[in-house]
Image 1 (cartoon, rainbow, N blue to C red):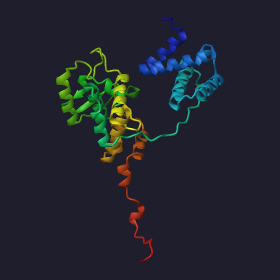
Image 2: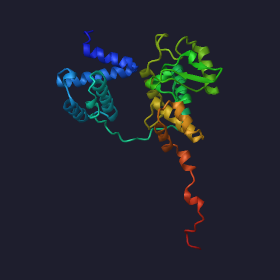
Image 3: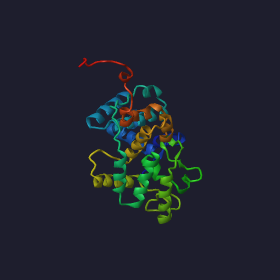
Image 4: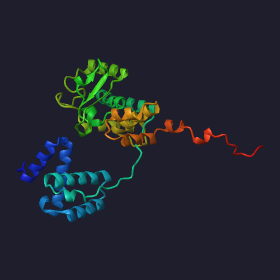
Length: 286
C-alpha cells in the first residue's frame, strides 16, 4: 500500500470529523482520484473549467444521473471543505434526474417474493426489510440487542446520514425472529456474515434478492429497496399518516416521503372527485 499524500490525508480527516460514513468516504475519494487521473495533475491544481470538462466527459461515457451527482458531491466537498474554495462549490451544477416512481410490490407479491428465498437468514433479513421499512445496510447491520421486545421497537443504528431512529416491531416479525434465533443463536449481529463477529454483507443479501426475483418470475425491477418502497406504500394505503411514515423511514424532508402518494393506487382510487359532490345532469334526459 502506497504512502498517503498530505492532501488525501487532509480530505480523509475532514470527512471523518464530519462523521461521513465509510462508504461515502470511499466514494468521495474514488471520485476525486478519478478526476485527478483524468487530467494527470494533483486535484488542488485544477479548477472550475476542469470540473466542467470532467462532467462533460462523464456524460459522454454514459454515467448515470446518480453517478454524476455522487461525483459532484465529492468535488463540492473537496473544493469547498478541504481546499476552502467555496466560490467554486456554488458553480458546480448537479445533474437533474427525471423523477421516476419507485417500483412497488402488491401484498400478494411480497408473500410470493419472500417464499422464493430458500436461504433462511436471507429470508428473515428480507422480511425485516419489508416489516420495518429498512434500507439494505440497516437490516444487515442489525444487532441482537436492537430488537426491543419489551417496548416492541427496533433500534436502527446504521442509518443514512448517521441518524439513528426507532421503528415499530411487528408482533408477527417478533415471532419469526424468535424462531430464527432459536435455530441459529446469533450472538452480536442478528444476521452475521461468514465471520460471526461481522454483519451480513450487503452484496450477499442483494444477490439473494436477485435470485428470489428470478425464482418468483417477476418481470418488474425489484431490489431490496423495493421492499422499503412497498412498506411505505402499504402503510399509506392502510391510512397511516404520511408524517408518521416519514419518521419511520428516517426521511429528513416530507417531500421525499410524499412521492409514495403517487404510487398508492388504493389511495388514488378511493379519493373522491369534486364532481361527485355536484348534483349535475350531464346526459340528456332519456
